Length: 246
View 1 (cartoon, helix red, strand yellow):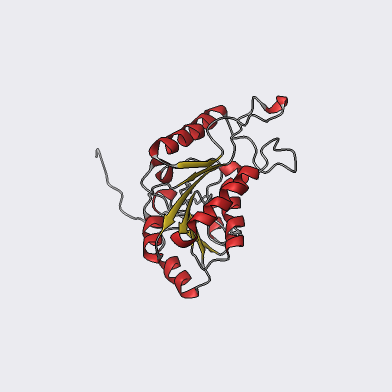
View 2: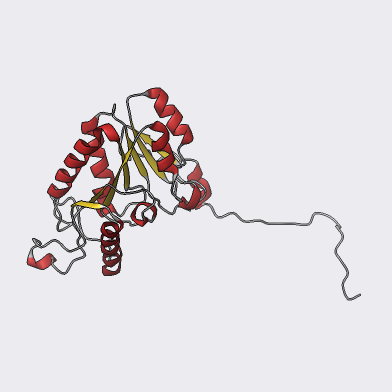
């Protein structure tokens, strides 16, 4: 059973920044942010935080929102009006909690063509300077909302990444192999992607820890997921049966 989660993205100062920027944008805004493995909490090391945040917001503002049947569209409509209201409410909450709105917002895009204006569209939203204890950083939004948070060093990055009730996916960006091994061991998530977006191989186990669910699917685990076990008991002898009411 998989239940999503606030998957962390840890971007260290020695990372390939161009690729990390590409992946961070894709991981949160693809599929309208309605994906269980979305990297919705993006932790950026302090030394590169200002420049990374600036570039991330600039690119988020340029993403194409529109008709999901148009191959040029990058962000489509949310699944329902009810869900739109939930995600929009979280954006307003994030601003109230102290987040800095750098892209998007809680209202529908004003430049949609007439035939799309009734749709459940939101612009890709970037909230910077978020505190990890804010509700927008702790609760599943399941929409195109990126929370950007600074961290000082490896120890703080790991602590913040784990400071959430969920644990499905995680993303680590660094050139330091020793750091990767330490973080992969310490991070509380069922899946760890290093220097890449979610490029899951369907033969690999998929699943999370903590409130992100139990068990695994994918590969040989799929036999258990899709199998219906049947227990058949046949007596082969004169085993004792209690004689009630004799």
